[in-house]
Image (cartoon, rainbow, N blue to C red; front, side, top):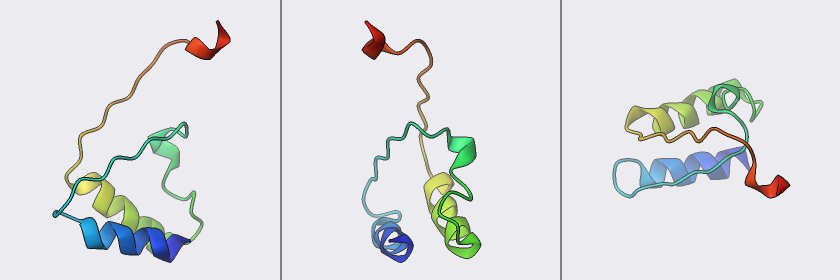
Length: 63
């Protein structure tokens, strides 16, 4: 799976937008995949030219 994600990232890098949503905080993304070299490559592509929106507040699901 890691190599597949990296391949998608490389194919789209600086050509097409990529939108990623996660409940995992961004600071925990690096290291989550478990392969340091692939982690570095994916994070490099994600953070080189990004716009990040972080939403904070209480969960609306609890209502």
